[in-house]
Amino acid sequence: MRWLVTGAAMVAGGLAARRLLGRSGQAAGQRAQRVVGRRKPRWHVATVNLPADQIGVHGQLPEPLTGLGDAVEIQVRPAAGDRGTEIAVRLRDGDRLPAVEAVQRVLGRDPDQAIRAALREAKQLIETSEVLHPDAPPTIESTPLNRPLQLVTRHGRREGRL
Amino acid sequence: MKAVVWEGANELAVRQVPEPRIRNAQDAIVRVRRTVTCGSDLHLLGGYVPFMERGDVIGHEFLGEIVEVGPQVRKHRVGDRVVVCSFVSCGRCWYCQQQQFSLCDNGNTNPAITENVWGFAPGGCYGYSHALGGFAGSHAEYIRVPYADQGAFTVPEGVSDERAVFASDSAPTGWMGAELGGVRPGDVVAVWGAGAVGQLAARAAVLLGAERVIVIDRLDNRLEMAQRHLGVETLNYERQDIGGELLERSGGRGPDVCIEAVGMESRSGGPQLWYDQVKQQLRIETDRPVAAREAIHHCRKGGSVFVLGVFAGMVDKFPLGALMNKGLTLRGAQQHGQRYIPMLLERMARGELVTEHLGTHTMPLDEAPRGYEMFKQKLDDCVRAVFEPAG
Image (cartoon, chains in turn blue, green):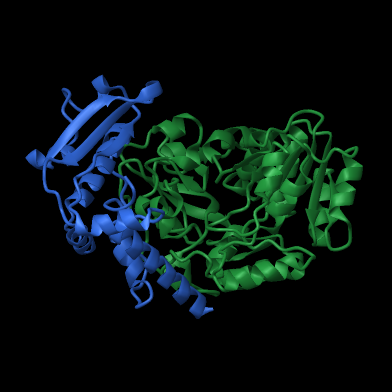
């Protein structure tokens, strides 16, 4: 059955690479345009389950967000339907070529990764008062097969669709 | 400590691994007293979930005793006998407040994987791959329980370990299928799968007032068990015409609620099993949805289908036409255990919910690989193997 796991890992790796290099389901023309054109920073938005006046100490957002400093713009607004508060973050400037962005993501130096992690951690701090840590010490062994997965899980909060 | 670890597809071993530590202020450490195999573990063992790593501790249905608590744990203290929900949920995000605990925004430390695969990330689950947080599983002497005040429940005096352990996962999963499937008094309910979850979904349907509950499987011992312990009707799909029987038993209307409690490796008596197996092995489809197709086909017009069995990815030949044209409601979920466990423990204490018969084989943790082999191959009429780490 090892070939099954190998195959699945390759498929997962391919999907991850495809995700890193460009979203699936988009027209080829759009994709081609994005490869040559610079991409504008987009808003990353998380909704926290508290009204805006109960977020943070003295209205101050949690450290993971304030730690991003002047490199980002932050907007805080009530969520529709009394679902709490939306926190939106985007890079202040820095249009990037998709290829440059992809390389930065692979190297873990993409500023959008830092924004995603900060948003997720801030949401956890606001809602639960702590950031949930993975188990430690880990029980797993590194093998050639699981290295791609380990790379993915190292970026567990820094990647995704947020 | 000793733990059962995944070493590769169809390879399990009992190994020494580091003991868990408190990592968050809301954590507890639980000494595991009983931990149970689950059909969904077989998907991990078979290599169908490509997010496992060599050395991952498996197991997610368990009961034990708290031996250490973090400084923010308020509800529990050292010595409490607790059953722990298999899903890790914070209890405070919007989803948890809607009682949809398995959709917790904060319980999964690796949201990127499932966001990319499924669009959004559900909560975490013990021993169920790095896609669901990578938390160490319960087939071990000790386990870390994050958000312990939310996920651990004190077992009432008088409810045995043997009964209460199934309140961790099987019983709330089954109850959820019946409740969110919309079972109402007088309904005819069909349940695909007579494993522990299917049996407990059938029992939940009875307790919610269904007039006829029909459990479908191919294993006579499980069907006899369902008749004997739950008082429900049964059908063996290898010997009986399921469509004809369901029509006959529902006055020609079809079941009001159909519950799929089989999952991604389901079987059938017909050629579609071979079709799906070939496609699954070639990775043209990831899951075999045979029972889900049947549930949709046989459900009455305007009825409800609830998918309890675990699916991971893509299925083929999904009867969307039947779903749309018959006006069906299709729902599914991982279990929202925190919503049901207190009520289920009360029912267990009152004797309304009996589960001991499901743990057909009890053995020390050292024998877990043998237990899984028995469970997987259904040897000696195994329904669930139960491991006692201290045994």
